[in-house]
Structure formats: structure tokens, C-alpha cells
Amino acid sequence: MAEGDGVDWGTTEMPELDIPQRKSISLNKQQITAIISSIISAMLLFSAGFMLYNWYQNYDGSNNANLPPPDEYISWQSDFRTMTGLDGVSSTGSGVGICIIDTGIDLSHQDFGGRQLAGWKDFIQNQETPYDDQGHGTAMSGLIWADGWMKGVSPNADLYVAKAMNSQGEGVDETIAEAVDWCVASGVDIISMSLGGAGGFNFILSSTDELENSVNDALSQGVFVVSAAGNDGENDDGDVASPGSVEDVICVGGIDRTGMIWSGSSQGDNNGELFPNPMLPRSNPDMKPEVTAPGKDVPVMIPPSQQPKEPSRYGPYAHASGTSAATAWVAGGIALLLEEKPELAHNGSSGGSGAISDVKQWISDSATGQDGHDDQYGYGVFNVEALISTANS
Image (cartoon, rainbow, N blue to C red; front, side):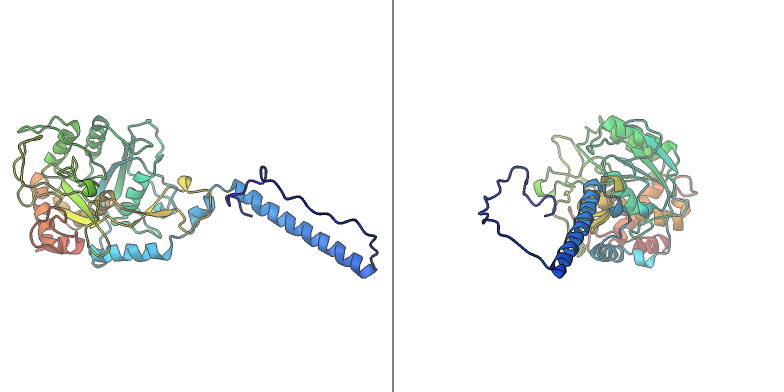
């Protein structure tokens, strides 16, 4: 019986046997030979069984690390790529710097192909070698940078990773704000933030929220910031999460493979409010969320070190739901646009806050499935092929 079938042989009481009185037995040569052969076979079977049990007891999940994802994951990934226009784009993000602020990255995953990061900074434990003790950062990085069984949106981008969230997937504004500042100082073009929380009180030129102030500094320097709408759609708190709520941030909601909104995707409040945080009504192209992208049952990579002990057909892969995945997808898509039009980058001839406004307008014009803005769907489903075409027109 395999381990884990629910039987504890150390405590289970065995039934009493009704043993008959022994009888005298005589065996001929053929019978003796057959018995000896059976004993040898039983010993070999026991030996093989013991070896299998010993392997199972010491299995650490490493065999999972080399397995391809199941066929349905490849199919789902293909559906999302078709929906978001990636099939019609040859760009790969080459020459564009993307900074992911998350739980870190495990570069040992087979779909990273042994590549090295353009930059790494650990704000939690100050370790020099990249790592991920939670898994979320590896999953988000894979959606952008994978180039194996899983296909990232912009696999040739220059990837920077700032670990600003701990092993529980939690972070504080001050630390994440430091990470934003580090990304900007590193010279990146895009910051991807698959995270969110409550915003601060906003004044004319600043916020009480340190993270929002760092994000606004990044935007003023022409760095694109992409952030999650949040996952409270089934228990809505009234608006998208911060820093996605910041005016020039590209805030992303989540959809499924049919283009329908994921039930957990947060809804934007675009009518303004007086309490608890005074806010004027939002206007185009800054209504929240701006766009939606793959956010339900999205195939993702997970660190091999965090594989289950039991052999699994899923290998070092899983599927996830949330606006985190949608955020990484859009960040990677903007890298494809910047490869095609490098003048829009922060250090390009047309870069700066004006370029961010232009790109946001093009996103709203090129997104599919919506006429105008919807508080859940945004301006529609992100489509990078249509975005690049709109930018070139």
C-alpha cells in the first residue's frame, strides 16, 4: 500500500488467526525446486519494492523540475497569446529594461535557460544571489521573461528584479518605495508591480503614501509603471488598489480565456468622492482600470525548490488567477512597443511624461471588446499587435 493511504500499520490491530494443527508434509524434487524459485522471486520483488519505497521516501521533487507542463497549459497559454495579439508580433523586448518588484526570482527554473539578470537587489535579507522564498516573483518573472515550454511576453528584455516582499508575500510601503527608487536609478524603462494596497491621502502635489510619491517620481521621469487593479472584486472595497490608483499608472484588471472578467478583479471608482479620500472624477485615458489582460487560470512557473514531494504531472508549473498575472502580461507587452518605438523610452527622443500619456491613449484606443470605458473591463482587453499598429498610425 502506498504511503499516505490512511493506514498506520504500527497501531492497527491485526485479526487473530485460526491456525490449524500442523500436518506432516512430504515434497518431491519438482515441488522443492518450485518453492525455491518462488522464494527467490519473492526476494527479488521485495528488493525492488524496497528500492521504490526508499526512492519515494527520499524524493525531493527534483524529477518534477525537468517535466514539461501538461498539454492543457500549453493550450491555455496559446489562447491567451492569441487573445492579446502576441501571435502577430515579432518583437521580443530586446533592449528594453523591465524591473519587477516582488518576492524575488529562482533562476534555476528550466524555462529561464540559465540566463542572468541585468540587475538584482534584495531589500528583505540583503542577499547578493537571487532567490525566491515564496514563488510569486518567479511566476510573474516567467510571464515576462520565460523562453522554454512557457513563453514570456518579452523574453529578450533586460530583466531587473527587486525583492521587496517577504516569504509570506507581504511588504510595506516604505520598502517597496525604496525598490521603486532603485529601479529608476538602474535606468529601467518599465516597472511591473503585481501588488497593491490602500492608498494615502492625496494633496495637490503629493500623497501621504510614500510608495505613491516614489511612483509619481518614476512617472515624472518617463518610466512606465504597470500595477494590479486588485483582487477584491467579490468583496469590493470601492476602487482599485494603490499604486494602480495613481493617475498615470497603467492599472490592469483580469479576464479569462473567453475574454470575460475574472470575478475577483477589482472595480474602479471613476466618479470621484469626498470621503474618505477626496478625489476628482477621473477622465480619459486615465479611468481605472485602464485595461484587462489574462487573469484567470493563467499558466505560470513555480520554483523547482518549492515543488511538492510527490511526483506530479504538472512539473514546475501551476495555474494562477489574479490581477498580478494580468499586470506582468501588460508590462511585457509595453516592452514590445518600446522595442518597436525606442523614442518613447524614458531616455528616448520623445520620452517623458508626455510619452506615457500618449501610450495610455493608444492603449485605450486599441483595446478590444469595449466601446468606451467600463469600471471592470477598463477600455477593453489589452492587444499588443493593435497597440503597436495604433502607435505607428
